[in-house]
Length: 272
Image (cartoon, rainbow, N blue to C red; front, top):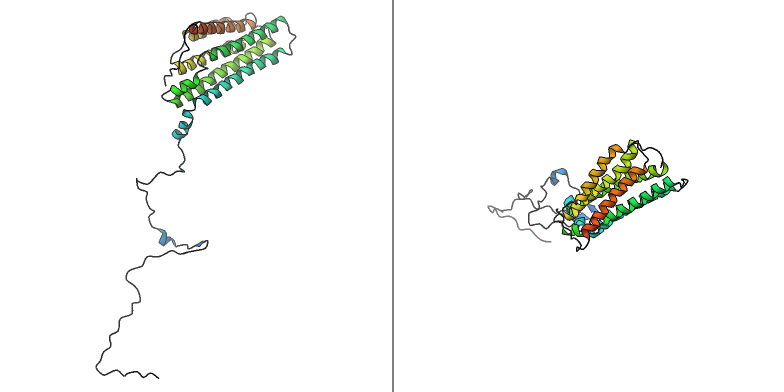
C-alpha cells in the first residue's frame, strides 16, 4: 500500500482555480450528419449575409432581359425576311382561294367570269408590286441597318397593313363574283377600293424601310383611288370598281418596271 505523506504544519499548497466558464467564446463549428443538417434557432441566424463585391464574376445563369432577347433576333435578317415573305404568300394564296370558292358555285356567266379574271389579275399584281424590289432584299436591309430591331418591328407592322388590305380585297372578290350585276353599296366599294389602298400604303412604308425613300407612283395611285371612291357606290356593277383598282395597280407595276429597266439592282439603304 502507498502511504501518503502528511502535510507539514505551516506548509501551504497552491492550487489553480477551476474555471467554470471560459471568458473567450470559441467559434462554433456546425456539424452535419448524413442528410440531417443541424437547424439553428433564429437568434443564431441573424447574421448579415455576405455581399458580393464589384470584382465578383457575373452569374452564368442570369435571366436575360428584354434588350438581350431582342439582340438574339436582331442579326437574324434572312430568317426574318423569309418569315415575312411566307406570311405574304399565304395571304396571297388565300385571296386566290376565296376567288375560286366564290366562282365555283356560280353559273359561269360572263359577269362572274370577268370578275373572277379581274380578281386573278389583281392578286398577280399584288405579288409583282410586293416583290419588286423591296420584298427581295429585306434581309439585306436588316443586315445593313444600324438598329436591326427597329426595322424588324417596323416591317412586322408594315406587313400587317398589307395583309389587312389583301384580306379586304378578297372580300371584294367574293362580292363582285357572286353579285356581278348588282349595284355596289358603300360597304362593297370600301372593300373593293379600300383593300388596294391599304396594300399600297403598307407597300409605300415597306419601301421606305428598305430604301429610305418612297416612289411617287405609290402616293399617286392612292390619291386616284380615294378620289374615285365617292362616285362608285350605287352606280354600275361591282366589276367597275374592281376593274379600276386593278388598272391602278397595273400602272404602279409598270412604273416600277420602267424605273428599274436598264439600271443595276438598287441596294438596300435603310434609314434606321
